[in-house]
Image 1: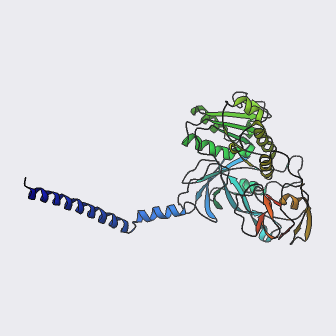
Image 2: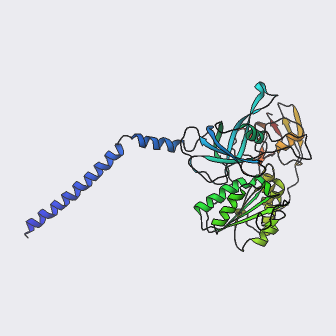
Image 3: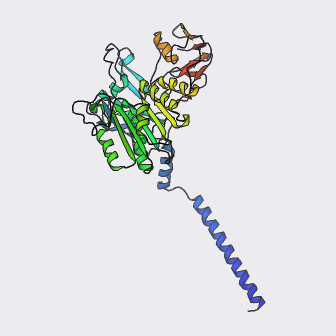
Length: 414
């Protein structure tokens, strides 16, 4: 081969390589500039509507009782627009706007806002919440029954449409499969635990999960057969059902594993040695006992996650943060402008909502845990403190009564 032929071959190879590069670049440009097809447009719209702001309409497609007493009912919800739903974090809640009967309101109805935990793992086609009917306390029959829970149980049927805000909340399962999860639920506090449990078993099947679920007896136990079946087929799931007052037909070792209450002593006796992530949700007495007990046991603060019903959240958070009793309260005047009342904050109440209610100042409330925003009022002067950041995004110049305490003298538009 002559030098001239070799040079010709080299030039041809370079030209071929250049032509291939130009052709590939032109093809990429054409693909990027191609108009959206109907399928592409549908996918883009689906992605943009998967998460939303404000209210979105959902149809109730099914309802189902979860306990023998028929006091806990699951509502299955599908978006009216048919668009897929973005995955939520197991443990989060939905916020609802409900129109309930109220003889004292114009038209005989009024809107209330309530939050309910999601009780199933993420599903792009719909949501599930499980609601316990709240009755008047047996020792205080003069008190009203739960307004929203009774409305849902008695009035909301398949086919009805509800207004719902997107899932939110800071209480949710972590993504550390190497650390065993301990889920502790008391009463209807089982709902976020059910969501966490099903997600863990599906997404982290090798992770050890311990569920401690406390109720009085089998008739009050939600998801009974479902939980027993999950424990049977998942070797890494350890079910610990605790009855405080077993019924005459309840069988130890079959219907329940322990008698008494879920407490830290039970956890110390039954959990394997080592680090765990604890997730706790239940009524105030259980919360205050277990959360404080875990801290005293030496569990690191970052391994304790909890969501209480109402103001127990604030008290528990403050106790964990300080490791001691609350500091001496400073007295502040709190003036409710619309009501024309000036009250003295002296630390007797857990939050401003309790102060207002104790003195019969009428204010709106919903979740009582800083989630729904029902008790948000305009802050005309002064400063309000929160033991932890509320889930609800508080607007500038406003405050949440249910989780707020005075940082100074206050004037509230309420």
